[in-house]
Image (cartoon, rainbow, N blue to C red; front, side, top):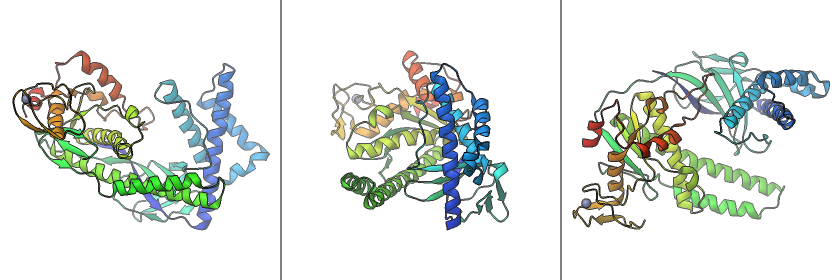
Amino acid sequence: MRVKTRQTFRFYPSERQQRQLARDFGCARHAYNFALKLRTDSFKEGKSINYNASSAAWTEHRRDAAFSWLRESSCVPQQQALRHLQTAFTNFFAKRARYPSFRSKHGRQSAEHTASSFKWDAANRNLTITNLGRLNIHWSREFQSTPTTVTIIKDCAGRYFVALCLDEEKEVLPKTWQSIGVDLGISRLATLSNGERFANPRHTMTYARKLGRLQRVLARRVKGSNRRALTKRKVARQHSRIASVRKDCLDKLTTDLVRRFDVIALEDLNVRGMVKNHCLAKHVSDASFGQFRRMIEYKAGWHGKEIRIADRFFPSSKRCSGCGFVHASMPLDVRAFTCVQCGAKHDRDENAAKNILNFAEVIPQATAGQAGSNGRGERVKPRAASAVKGNARRSVNRPSSMDVEHVLHS
Ligand SMILES: [Zn+2]
């Protein structure tokens, strides 16, 4: 199966390239903000401006002598910025996102190039970009296809990356006839219904504590001072360190699960509601839950595996997976318990994983990751979560085309 993927590589620009990149980022940002202001102003007057109209206005604006500096940069990232704004508006009108906001010169910067403004030499692995020339890229992994778009990114920690949109061949993995329930936790990353445990990545909490300390230092720094800028970069670096450790760990876990199991059952967690609390440990793990869900969904889609979701309101930890008795309460500090009805001894998380496996619902195939692209071939977030939630409560025994028996008895 051919799937669209995005792979990111670090690169090291020369000083000349850094200066040109600063111009490219600035021009793309200017285009985005120009069109956003135009569309917002006309929206207030009751008119609506579509992509074509904003593009025409932008072409006119570029001809303006006062803005001749826009012509020192390739027009492609500017045009792409207008397209990104269009996507942001589409998502806003479909109630998937908030109203687009202006882009700031502080923080992460990006400029997207299409086939007309870059050259890819597959044999020598050379990526050449208009006005920039050849990039010094650290090729950290393999890929076969020709990039369709190339996005240049400068992150908050001042590092440069290229993100390539690729059209890669993914193999449908052989059937294993195994299914599994997964319980995601705070003290432990994941517990499986067969008793396997996956620990949280090492050092994550040390990194998180260091981040907290740096953030407190940042709060004391005088606005606009050099020391504040320096601390800010350190905070950003620490953030990215935590994120990459977490991503690496989740990548390994999800790949392992997708290889070994045909059906993977998860609990539907209200991630948005959970991230609001202030406890550090929980904060770190909450961010993982959403990322885990997205990763396992797209990987299952790539490799022909199935994800099932257990209702968020289902009492997965209070219920005995052996006899079905639902206990009145199960405080978070109870790590193991004995069922008062059948006397079975349970590990809390393993019991929850077993319940998740037994009660997970089938996600409609269309939302299970394969249909994750829109008309322009860009990836969009599957709207599975809300659709599944609605159905899960109404029909407990919804007939499915898949092998339900196989799930219930394994
Ligand atoms: Zn029991």
